[in-house]
Image (cartoon, rainbow, N blue to C red; front, top):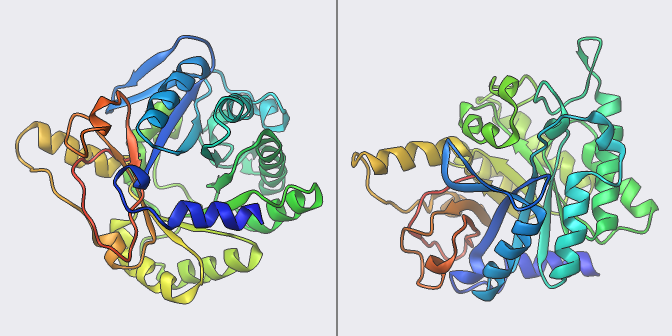
Length: 331
């Protein structure tokens, strides 16, 4: 099955630094746009045409995985039910140009909501039913467009089971599902500038798990695996090493540790002011995370080939070989 091949390719047999990288891409509507993010130096938002050129550069040095995040300038909840959504069009363009890529898409509604919430709101209240319908539609559109891995980040009950059911019904069971377990944290805040959602700079969100809810988190992991999750993502990673450790021993599924933008901001600005040094952070791997998502700043050494890329990159590090790389850029 293609799904199992994708998972195996993504998490095994990656012995060189190039093999351990994924390129995160914030996608904007329009043409010929490469826009820096003020709170994430070195991270850019790209229009689809420029993004294709950036991906070509990545491929030239051996990077074979990309993750996409949608950045809508004008919010339109109607696009959550349209095959012409920005991310669906981007997936088709990227896969059409680079079919060999392992392509990952973020799946949430927050890019199109004025509130910035991961929920649609009706009459001042979260409408979970409508949100779930939007997620199912988007997942279907992304899978039809050719995405390999869907990163479900809405934290809504029943999301994985419903999405898997829809994909299986439509014969799209080859798409890999990776639900995200989000703990409440202000570390997500800096990245929100990428989505032009000033109102969304309010954290923690009420549906994120409280920081002291380890038992609830483990039950969530079990439930998502039973519902059809192929990979589990836990974030913020360093704040929840105990959960990663326990989850790895509880479920027979790859675990991803995600370092959010606030972690990057702390280290980046500390480094610029000479109050911190470049350090390695192998802790998620020591505690059982099979993968770690950490963006890399090319101006710090991480292999001579990487320095030729004018983009930010994500590290995927295997737990069975605890490694460390230079650089701090986190999504």
